[in-house]
Amino acid sequence: MELMSDQEQVEFRTMIRDGLARVAPVETTRHLVTEGRRGDEQLRDRLVELGLPGLVIAEERGGAGAGATALGILLEEAGRVLLPTAYLSSATVAPFLLRHDDSGRAADVIAGVAAGVDRVAFADVDVRGAARTELEDGPGGPTVTGSKAAVIDGDLATDLLVTATRGGESVVVLVDAHSPGLVIEELPCLDETRPVVQMRFDHVSGEPLKIAEVDRVLDDARALLRLSLAAEASGQIAACLDLSVEYAKSRRQFGRAIGGFQAIKHRCADMFVAAQAASASVAAAFAAWDEQPEQRGLIAEAATAYCLQAGFDAAASTMQIHGGVAFTAEALPQLFLKRAKATQLLAGGMDAEVARLADLVFDEGRDPLEPILGAAS
Image (tube, rainbow, N blue to C red):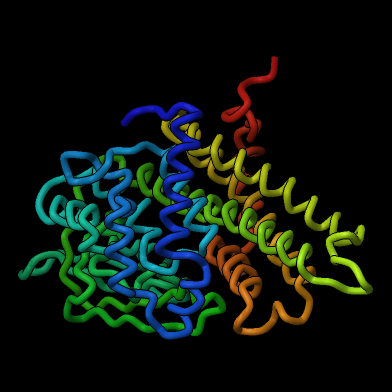
């Protein structure tokens, strides 16, 4: 992994933005979702050509070996176009967890992810009120029994990383998404660009990963997933700003462009400030991710708490600026509003997100900005 200079970051962002604008503009997202083609193979192949699936996977496994900073840039630009294909867990959590066990099938899966052949979903949250997901050792090998809720990209996954317990200890299990005994139930979703599914496991065969300090690693994996959602939200704020400014310049009312009215100016100005703050917080958090691993939970929560709320506020302002047309299925603003609210819910809601941040700050007496800005003099 190599550190990226400021100039390299700018060049990398330009390359990713131009590539996604060419193969997966947000208008394409709307069409694919409307036609039920989130798993479009042509789009997936084009993303592989851009090298996106294997960005942070080690070069010896077929990836690019990039670091956290590059990943943050990729996620921001993916959020800008509401990239609909299954990439979130495959590009973030899967490489992070699978690199801790490069033996057996795990090595094949990570190479498959880098090649764009395999897609991995992270099945972590147990269904509320149900028994905890368990890994049992049987005569035919280890099996998983339990249920998981709100699995992102579970409808398109070829493999699953399932959290479970065995003998009271945490374990991560690699499961084939087409295994007998696994039932995947599609759920009604607010955000059609990223539906979630519920999964039921009835003695499903799986391969437990050999991960040292598994509880700490899982905490980091969950923090990385939330930070990834924050990075996407940062890109969505920038996209909402672009949509709003363009519409405000072209929409005329009372003989003038509506962008000339103070109320519209203020909303756009607020979005600009939010976009800058969100991007800065995400960039700092991903930079600190590699440099300060002991602070990963804190820096992820600080960025996530800000970006997820700012993302929803920006989408709501975009709806207001566009007026009634924004609510139509053909309009783009409603896609961003749905994604913003759905992302908040995936994180457990903003109250839960802020509570997690408060626990990290006040229980340990730490300053959430210290990992990013350094200790006060």
